[in-house]
Image (cartoon, rainbow, N blue to C red; front, side, top):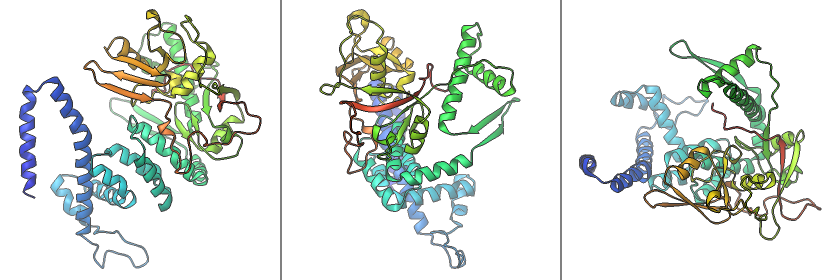
Length: 444
């Protein structure tokens, strides 16, 4: 282990050079440390914990005859904990996690060690595939590692969740029933006379509740309430629950589902806008009580006609843009398109058309990044966005590739669902709507 001393020396040397490094060198160092080096260090830590566990097998007296015991000594955590000034329970949990990761997702751990996958994506894949069979998990692991890392761990988790729903639709439906039976409301005491109220509910109810709270809070702000919007939301929730706020507000949620799912021809997952993938059965149940809107693309080009000098896109074009982009087009941003601005790639004031090939979803923060933060945005073809930073680094995001769909090995993204006889050409999906949310994402 003498090489560890060399690592310490390199660490100290790099730390000393930080005082005189340039902006470009600082950026490269941060990317390296937060990216590949952080992943490799996490991978090495997993491998070291597994090796330590292998070197401490359970003793004969540790395993019960009637129940399988731990794969390593139950006293190992007690040996490590004092060295780290951690509780034995914390160390025990970390050792168990490392053992499970290495045993259930060996390919993903290899990718972590190589610096090709980060820790958060590995944990997301582990969480999502935990309930799958060994064979299903192997398929999910191979498919996820064969695809792109996507723009963020959040988008990676969405893709993994879609893939898991496809691999085990029956299990997903069963777990949904079990989770529904365990819904609950809890209270956690906080400091300074505060407390946190938490509710575990079905996703569609949470979206509807959040939208109603947000709408009432924004109305209060419009009427002159000058407090921060978060505080107004909190008071609106309390007022609604305590019964002294009775205004009628229409609640709106949106669900996107392939035609084959809605027709019962397959069990491909649906999408609850603002939440993510949901089991096919839940999508069908929500669609049964909904107002419908069909999204159509041109069967040849997939585009719509240019709307000339109209600044605000027509409703049909706005829906089509949001359906195409799904989320803010900045790489890695997970804000749903339904909560984002429709931004002109070439600004309208500079002659940019209000058209399919010059519009894209951008959350308010990244909209301002482009207009005020010095970043440039190009759209070389419809749905392909190139964000260029102030220092000239370009980041490409193609919303047409649908990398986050989470398809099975024998599925093609263009034929993943069966279109019923008589369906209109170019029809991509049916969108059952319970009226579209009008405001930003739920803050809690």
